[in-house]
Image 1 (cartoon, rainbow, N blue to C red):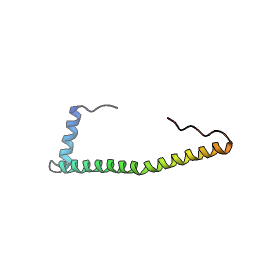
Image 2: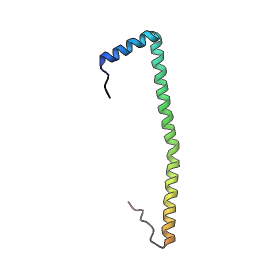
Image 3: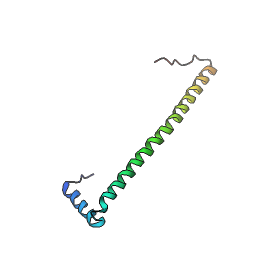
Image 4: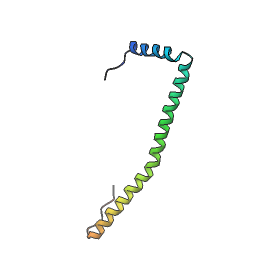
Length: 81
């Protein structure tokens, strides 16, 4: 992937000023920043909501493994760290 130099960024900024005008650019940048913040906040909330579900699922799987071992007559797995 090619990087953008200062000349390319200056050209892009000039095109944006021509398209949107100097007064609308700060509003546009502010709304984009709010959108990115909202997206990140939503991703964090989603990760927090899924975390307990994942912990519960792994605990159920561990219990099922322990039950299977006990049913087969083998010694239960050691849980010491």
